[in-house]
Amino acid sequence: MDRSIIQLVDDLPQDNITVKVLNAIDAIAPSQWNNLVGFENSIRSITGETDPQIIQQIRDRAVVFYHDPQYGYQNAVKLYQTVDKADAAIGAMALANKVGEKISFLSFLNNITPKADTTQTVDLLIKIAVEIIAFCQLNGIPQPNPQVFAASLSNNYKDAALMRMVALVCLDAVLPLGANFLAKIHGIIDNADAGIVTNNPVFGAASGFLPGNSTSEKFGFITQSFNAVQGWMDGFISQTGITPQSIFDSLGNMIQIADDNLDFVAAFVDQVTNYYEHTGIQTVAQKLIEQTYSSMQSELGSDRTLSAPPPSASQTISDGGEYAIAQAVEVWDEDEEDWYQATILKAKDGEYFVHYVGYGSSDDEWVNGEDVRVRDHSKTDDNGFAEGLKVKVWDDDKEEWYTAQILRCKRKKYFVHYFDFDESEDEWVHKDDLV
Image (cartoon, rainbow, N blue to C red; front, side):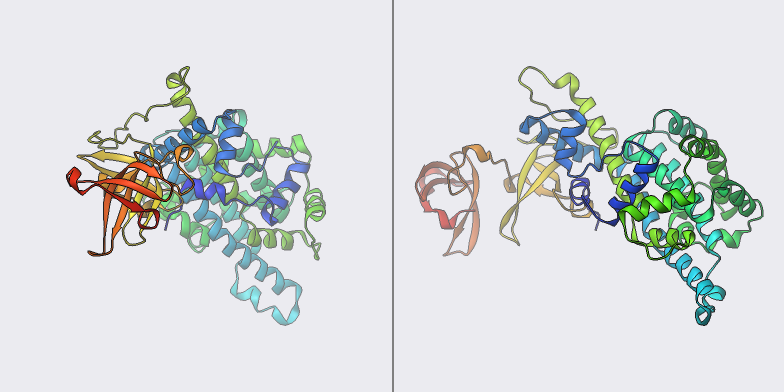
C-alpha cells in the first residue's frame, strides 16, 4: 500500500544510522544539509509561515498536488524507494564477496557473487540515471535529459538533493572504488556486456523507469547520464579534497566500525542505510511545499485564508456540493463506526473523491456527501460536539446509524435533526449515542 507524503515525511527518523552516516559525510564535504523531518515542521521551515490555519491549508493543498500525476511527485518517491530497496541487496552481495576474500573457508562466496567493484559500479551508474529521471519528473521536463540535469546540478542543487549527490560520490564512488573511481568506471562500462547490467538487482528494479526499449538502449542512457555528471563529480572531489581515508575517518566518528577495509565498509553502509530514499523523500517534500506555497501567493489576502487549488488538466472536477477541492474533512467509515481525517480530491454530483490522511492512494475512494463533515475543534464542547455539527446517531431498536445535525447542546444531551426526516422526529439524545 502506498503511504501518503505526509506519513512518509512524518516517519523520517531524526536520528538513526542513516542520519549518522549523512552527518558524517556532511562534516567532511559540507552540503549545508539539515535533516528536516515532520511535514508541518517542513512547511514552517520552508515557507516561514507560523499561522496554524495557513499551515493546515498548505498541507491540504499539498496532498492534492502530490496525487496529481502531472507533477510526478509520487513517481519520484517510488524511484527513490525502489533503488534504495535494491541497493540493500547490492550491499549484501558486495559484503559476501568481501567476506569470501578475507576468510579462507568462505572463499566459495567469491565464486557465487559478482566482484564488488563491478557490482557497486553498476549500482552507482543506475543511481545517477535514476536521479536524472526523478529530477526531470519533479521539474516538468517531459523526457529525461542528462544535460539539463548536469546544468542544474552545478548551479541549483541544494539541501537534501545536494546531500544525496554528495553521499553518492562519497559512499558509492570514492569509498568502494578509490580516488581513481572515474577511471575504474570507464574501464567497466567501456567493456561491459549486457549480462553485467541485467544481472544487477538495482537495474532489475529500475529497468521499468529507464528510457529505451532494450537493455542496450537503457544501458546507453545510463552511460550518457554518467558522462553528463562526471565533470561535476571530479570538480567536487578537487574542491573538497575528500579521500577514501577521510570518509572512513569521518564515518568512524559517528558509528563504530570494526574493520578498516574501505570497500568492506562501503558494502556494509550500502546494506544498512537508506540515504537515497531518506533524502529523496525530503527533496520531494520540499519541492511539493514550495510549489504549493507559490501557487497560493496571489490568493493570500489580508484575511490570510486560501481558496481551493485550481483543477489540473488531468482531473475531472465539478463542485457539485458543499465541500471544496483540497478541503480538510472527516469521513464516516460504517465498518469501523468512526470518522477519519481526509482531504477532498474531486467532487461530482454531491459525492466526493477523498484521500485519507496517513493512508496510501490505493485507499482513495468516492463517498457520499452525507458521510462527510467539517469539524471546528475550537468550537466543540468537552465531548467533542457543537451546534451545527453533522453526527451519526445510533438507533438501538433498528440497530442502525442515522445521519443528523446537532441543533442544541445541553451538558451530555444533544437535540438533533435527522437528515431526510421532518421536524417531528427531532429529539434529545445522549452523548453516548453520538459519534
